[in-house]
Image (cartoon, rainbow, N blue to C red; front, side):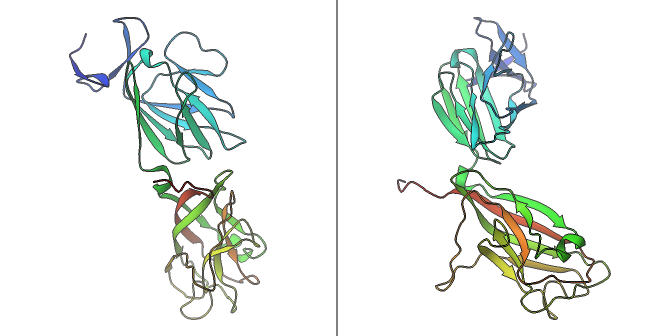
Length: 281
């Protein structure tokens, strides 16, 4: 057997492979540092160490798990193997749009991993220790993309989703929005009031932030690339009303702009928050 560097929570080869016990004394199974994708397909999944997999089971073969709940609800449960069956670090990253409810083999709750968040599970054969990678509700995520000129020209009638709905009981807290009009050849023609807005839900949703589009300093009527950074602004007269389980969309507030041909690229920084929160620190 290769030389091992022993730690309390795993046995590591110098090549950085690590050992996972298969439940048989002194017969650990080894698998390398590698990614494994778990598509939960709208159902709970139990991770096992060896043998044939049954209904709702998936054999653990990598120590970096990319998990997608693929849920029609708020999330699905991912059950870890019995503590006696494994040792070492396990990195779990939620790549889907719903919560992954991490449990031990007795179905006791260990941690809720929100979309875009991750956790490290460490096991010494007896006890599982968990560490969130960033406090779940403090993790800043990003949505990056672009609106085509055709979408911009129809944005009043047809708002475009920029960030998908976060799930029941949660809302999207927008931190900032970077807009980049990547100038092509013709400026848009915008009238007063046809502001570019970031909203919740749809055309009738709450405004999060907005920017004027017309005039020499507006977002859309210049004949060069334009960059604007937008921040949500709450004042005594206007407060942002967070909307639960709603997407964030782009919308032109009044009428359609015309005759432009430049795409608008966007980068939105945001957090996923719970509407009803604990007051305990």
